[in-house]
Image 1 (spheres, one colour):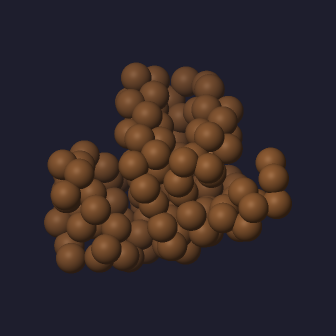
Image 2 (cartoon, helix red, strand yellow):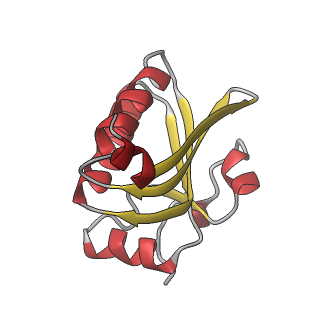
Length: 130
């Protein structure tokens, strides 16, 4: 990866909380960085019933490549009977989801502890804020 790519996606960290993998991202998810993230998500979701939280609270920009990455991850995880949650407090990101016709498609939380809860909360399934 070039230095310019590394600056655009400045931070990619993972940790495990119980049976859940939390991937934290910082910077831009765009046409230049989405392939890197996609490869890592594929590796993290290779097994049966993957449980993944994508922490997007520090993502400053996402383009259609980033949205495609999120949709691909969701579809891959659902096919394997797993669970994907997004964490973001950004009204702008939620507006992007709505305008792209993706509101209600993702389980979205504003705080990480909510996303790590084992029960699916009905209010968390919809991206209606903002």
